[in-house]
Length: 250
Ligand SMILES: [Fe+2]
Ligand SMILES: [Fe+2]
Image (cartoon, rainbow, N blue to C red):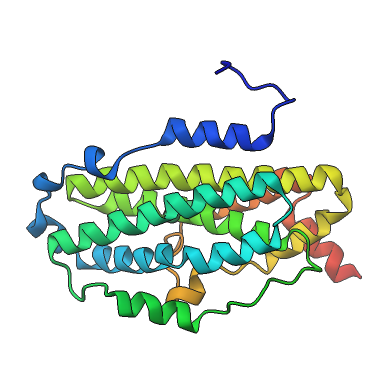
């Protein structure tokens, strides 16, 4: 394996490599026998957020199947979504396991998970909008990273802190992968810049479909919001506020 990837190598090789470097193990990296249940249960608000997060992660097969169909001919996107499917499953599995281990109620049931999928929109995404679904995906992952990081900072239970740190790092990587896919599309079609800006302004977290009110970034998390805008502006070479001004002037 070469130390540095050359530009001749496909984008997915970089994503695969980053995924291998960031890989962690549910079994080995969390000491399940050392979890302090009473300490965890003393923070029910955190566990409630964890439960919603597990439900959102469980929803990936529906959300990603739409995205896979949307970007079916994009080789790199197929890899990014495959990694997301696996790692999103891992997040769901680890979070549910954690909640069950500490004895949090109500327990997540398979019937509940199926009900979420039954309510979901299983139709195709709008094929006339070539980049917006990727923007929604990227921003959802970006906010998920901040959500898990902040939750980890607030959690008192040591194994939960470790788990949330590992998940947050995955989400950062997922957001970056999505950003790479968008950059690739913009390089080939610079005329799509306004579509990216529009999608950012109209952003809606896909988790809304799963749990209604998504506990995305913590309220008042200025850094999460600022970096949200930075991601878009770096891709588009334009500030979101300037885009909005232009739209108003039309
Ligand atoms: Fe996730
Ligand atoms: Fe993710």
